[in-house]
Length: 382
Ligand SMILES: *Cc1c(COP(=O)(O)O)cnc(C)c1O
Image (cartoon, rainbow, N blue to C red; front, side, top):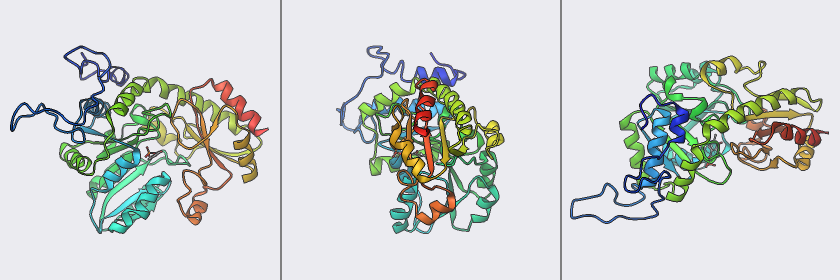
């Protein structure tokens, strides 16, 4: 049996074990049922309809809540579904402050969907706490950040922002996709909500699209459960099972992602065609010290700038082992051109100002042999 003190690594491996009392199955059964028989009028087994609740999803959600230290986790059909449900909490006229160094899809849903419903947003460099404080208005209801940022890996000060949010009674939400609960625990710094694209590290195998929202306080969790059940973007039972299976190796995978990314970042810094490397583990990264204070590792994501956009295109064309593909956080290494792919929906002027141009490449370091990844980069940069 797990105790309250069980380490996160053990919790991950044991996720779902003991869930099936009837057979003792080690692996959580996939309850592929849309609905459930009622014993009688006004009686329920605890399950009525799968959008509202499903035992496989429940095993996943309970495991995730415990891992993060929140009161309740909710599993969604994608990271965007989790983020959308977060935004549905707000009403017309509410103002949000959001990281400017942010996933392009979040930017798109805010600007092209929620703007129509009267949500207003300020995009701010959230690695600058003063800039965040300055952006607060009487209508501001929440702060949503990504740290490290995407794709430039800027680091926000979780403790300072947590305090700021408390002082101004703002809901503090962290999209923790880049680090996972293994490396960063936003609740410890005063976050109210943690959101994941579980398509990335939590799923970890580039074979699943899923999202997670975890609330620290019970009443907020209830509100988000109401929204999840009302709007319906739940994670189906088979995908819940696949995510449980993936989470079992999360701690091991993160260890390898961190080690290899650090080694590759150091190697890239030495390459003549590479003009800048963005990785929080590098001592010259502006967020390095802050990272050391608030995270257990620097993660598996890095970006680097090459001499010009032709070189970037040539690198992408020549890659053999590393796939030129969108997404991140899987066991397979992937490289993207953020200006065109993940951040294509951010207006060109904003991209330019942020430095997301076509000579910037983003690498999601997989768990292949690091020597093989470096060899592939070496031939691609030749
Ligand atoms: C991918 C991603 C999302 C969106 O998640 P999907 O699972 O693709 O819907 C949100 N935030 C971050 C940081 C991401 O990387």
